Amino acid sequence: MLLEIDDVCKSFGGLRAVWECTFSVAKGSITGLIGPNGAGKTTTFNMIAGVFKPDRGQIRFAGSDITGVPSHKLFRKGLVRTFQIPHEFGHLTVRDNLMTVPPAHPGERLFGAWLEPAKVRRREDEIRAKADDVLAFLKLSHVAGDPAGTLSGGQKKLLELGRAMMADPTLILLDEPGAGVNPTLLEQLGDMIIELNKAHGHSICIIEHNMDMIARLCDPVIVMAEGTVLTKGTMDEVRRDKRVLDAYLGGGE
Amino acid sequence: MSPDQIYGLFLYGISLLTMGGIYALMTLGLNMHWGLTGILNIGIAGFFAVGAYTSAILAAAPHPGHWGGFGLPAVLTFPAAMVASAVVAYGIAGICIRLRSDYLAIASIGIAEILRLVVKNAKEVTNGTLGISNLPRPFEWIPGAGGQLAFLGLVIVLVLGVYWLAERARTSPWGRTMRAIRDNEDAARALGKDVDAFRTRAFVTGAAFMGLAGAMTAHYIKFIGPEATEPLQTTFLVWVMLIVGGSGSNRGAILGAVLMWTVWSASEIVAGYLPAELAARAAFVRVFLIGLVLVVVLQRFEGGILGPKRGET
Image (cartoon, rainbow over all chains, first blue to last red):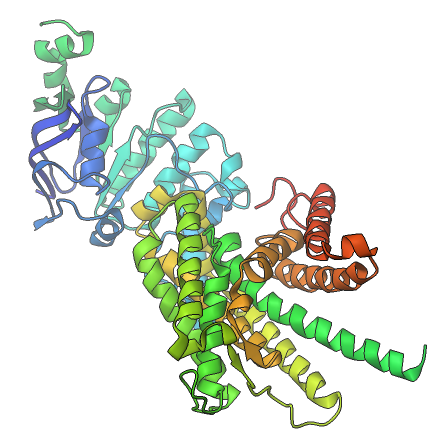
């Protein structure tokens, strides 16, 4: 298993956001994480991504314990996340948003910026070529030079995905990539995620409310409700589970 | 005008540019802190003082009242001043760099005040309120105006050097990541950027420039005392200079420094012509004039003279 969430708990004051939550993401899979609002999905993502430290439990990534490891270190281990609400660098151009991502850039150290111009330029050329490939893949080449803040909501979602691609990660955590995206673009976004998984070999874990998208992309699907895992299976299995319906409709109490 | 008057004006022009240039070193440092990184540093005087006293103690002749007597040349004491300010900044960053900008601002005021009181009270080190005098000024062995001209030349070379470093940093991938951090810190962290480390580097580098300015000032006026670390002359003026010139722009930082120093310096002359009953309040008139220029400039140029236009970064 690439990612293992083991008996993880997190409370905010008296609110149990996540409680004894256990699931895993297999290498090479597109795992879906669904559940009604307030089920604890994003809190779980934030714990995996190092934003919050769990009160209890362990999170393992590629065999090593990453519980409470800060975001920037997880990135270097090959784990990258996108945000539910786009977190673009608004004043940077779309291309610069992508070019900021690759780590260990000699020009990102002041010493390199001042004294190694040739080395910095070489690396910049490589990164620019890669960024342009990603922009072409996302069909964003025509806005490459625009400030990212001027993009539409859907384009910003694509940019989030693009920044994750620039990192060559082992695992991408996508937090509601489809929210606020128009149906045509949503179709494209689905194709892109499948291609990222099949052709580029990234393992992916998605939180999403669009069930058609989940059905198309994800196997397995994990259902969360009230801070814990309710069930797990293929989309068809999950759909037939009465408990899932109850959780969404708020019945079965 | 008599030849004497013209010569006097010439010397005045040299001193104007010299001090304007020294202030430019500080505005370039502050632009690194505020314009590039968003660190609200209101403790500029502290870094200025650390640089000034470091260089003064290393360069002064032996004196029973304070440490020093090493008699080292400026070539060594100026870099030492930069290193000392950088080390102090590094220590402060370790404590405060995680604070949000408004809290960091309060912390920086506090730290600058602590440094000022240390300077005033650590008599055996700094000679207390008497200060350290008879500091050597580079090139003072050149007779006539030559020495002052040569010192101005040194200031210009240093300003150009610091400008090059600051501009190179701003336009490099390092500067790009700094802007990304300013735009969205959480995203930068998720993309592997060690935000605190980046901000610390900007803070330390800017502080080194301020320390250099402190050392230059001490040796230029050949004296350093605690009043040089009062916030009005350093912190307040430097902020006004950067805002007038255009925060975010290194050229704006230099322009603002020279321009506002000229206004500040000329206001002393103007204050001399005030009627007797106002002359006693000349100091307030000068501050008022600075405020007036600030307001007038910001009316015309929203982001400072060379700063970003509306809608730009």
